[in-house]
Every structure is written in structure tokens, then in C-alpha cells.
Length: 169
Image (cartoon, rainbow, N blue to C red):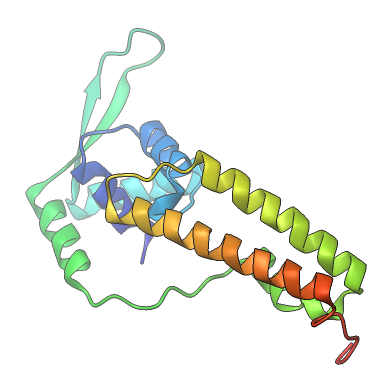
């Protein structure tokens, strides 16, 4: 997946400025993508050069004219072709997931503390995540619920002493 395709998908929902697109990405973790404005604007320029989006300058009540990007027919076709590609199991790339994978290397008390903090983070995120009306939002909520269930099971196992051995350290 590329940022360009995510931007095309967001623009399929309606015209937006680069700033708007950045806000939408940061506000909706269900999209499964994160990008900074320094990445978004070059991607928009590439989409513009490829003819996938058009640019319209609109007056802004404050500040310089607003640059609004719209999906072109070619962009809509590219987005539909990308959507039609077969799905794959997502491959995470997260330092937090890697740390969770090595929990057994920590002392039992530190492992339990890490699991407790992680559980609190999951619970907070789940509280902020609405059930949603899209498949992506429902998936995000279910993943959080599943991860929370896993954290609870690991904490219970740690408290019962089942995973507190120092093997493999």
C-alpha cells in the first residue's frame, strides 16, 4: 500500500486540502496509515503530475488561498484498481509490538508492569474508538478488543506464575 492510494481514497470521500488530508489521517487510526504533512504534500504533487488529482485554488477567509485537491476520473479508476487487488495479512512494523514479543526477557515484575500499562493504553484507545459505520472502524474496534483480551490473559497468567519463569533470558 502506498500513501498515494490512501490519499486517493480520502479524496474519493470529497475534495480536501493537504492540511485536511493530514487531519483525517491522524484522526482516523482505522485507516491503518500515518503520515506527516512533509510526506503528504510531495505525494499530492506526484498525484497531480500523474493526472490522478486536480488542484483548485479557493479563497480562504483567513490567510492565503486554499489549495483544494479533487479526484479526477483517472484517479478514481486508479483507486478502484488498487481496491480490487487481493488483500494480504497486514505486516506490522511497530517497536511496541516487538517489545511485547520479548516480554519473557524481562523480570517478572517489570513484565507485569509493562502489561498493565499496555492494557491501560488499549482500554483508553477502545474508549475513544467509536463502533463506527465502516468496515475499517469495526475492524479497528475488534482488534483493540482482541488485544485487550490478550493483555488480560497475559496478566492473569503472570499473576498465577505460569509465565514468570526466567527461562531463555
